[in-house]
Length: 374
Image (cartoon, rainbow, N blue to C red; front, side, top):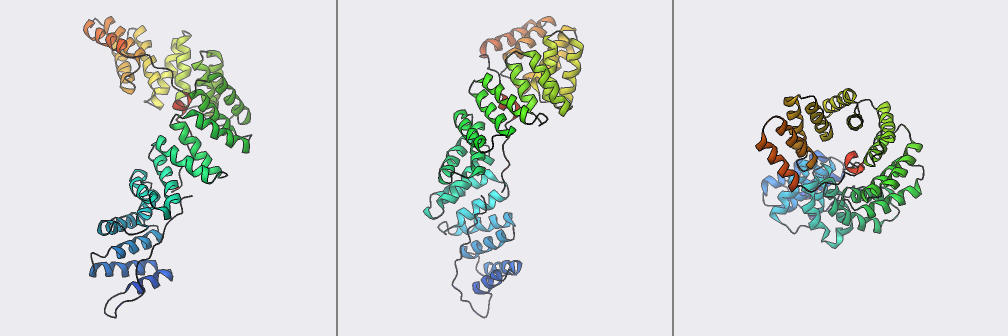
């Protein structure tokens, strides 16, 4: 989708005998002698340092050589000298996109999108660049337009579906994933992604059905059993959650989130030693899992291991300071340690914070976006 480089030539094919001519540079380019062509353009630029068209033509050659950083630098110089050169904003945006510099690609592609000659290509690249820059709401509007222009493009539907999901536009995501599923009805990934969209819409029982269908299609596909287990955990169906999470660990024994939620279930069922072992292992594999540290803090507090509990609960608060349950546990710990002032501060924070809803399964799994192919 992204092979849209616009090669715009600016020179008449004339020159002088005394210096390299644009005609010579163009001839070398047409013969495939790209490095020689680039050197010729550089000589022309050296002799005419304000020649915007020469910089633009050098950028085209560097882009053909896949030296996109050099191409972008040349295009920027050309635009600084002459902002009205045709096609260069699109070329600059594409050069940045090809390097994975998605945020940097947005401004020139916006400029190119306003030009009728390159509007559709620029808008497609602009949607992909917003997506790559993790600005999913903006990406969605451009990708929707591209899908309407090319309604049978499977790859575009996939990209739009993930953009909608990550922008939390769940109705859009569900519609797109259902379109994908109709064309690939046995796809475990499609079932799983429909489940993520349904859960984001608050339709968790239906999401569970989709994850069950995904597991039936691919029982050992990574993360399917975790997603199903998390949905059961979220629904407080801990026995079913345990079975699914253990199935995930059979596929991937180092799946930190599966270990953490199994540890939480063990804690809820008063299996303290097993809970601590699983939570410690989860935290060691991935120190960024909040529930592992919060639960370890609570368990250490029960064992009167106050320094260890304090370290775990402080880390949990650092990972997500808006979770009132962690502040409540921390307040109880300070009270047990005889620090009434600190305890009261934590209890006051609990009152300030509205209870957060449980995270969606998409947020736990991080979505499964397709990679961009710059």
